[in-house]
Amino acid sequence: MTADLIKRQLTDAFQPDLLEIIDNSAAHAGHAGARKGGGHYHVTIIAEAFEGKTLVQRHQLIYQALGELMKDQIHALGINALSPSEDNKGNQ
Image (cartoon, rainbow, N blue to C red; front, side, top):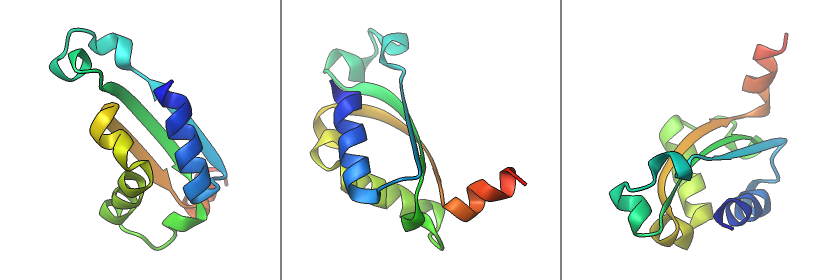
């Protein structure tokens, strides 16, 4: 299952404090990307690796960590990538 592969690869790459993966693929059945086998996912990840990184840098790190999955199994990926200090601001 692609969501399990996403979880494994992001966990290995970032050892996140939090990782949530939502598979929205069923809502996009019939869509061109879905017909080719690519799924639609949304990832929320909190990891130290994102501290001091721009939004673009964070996304690039995630794309690199997912590697071939981005080409073969993921058609669309929503990303909410935070550092632990950013997450803590919302909890105070």
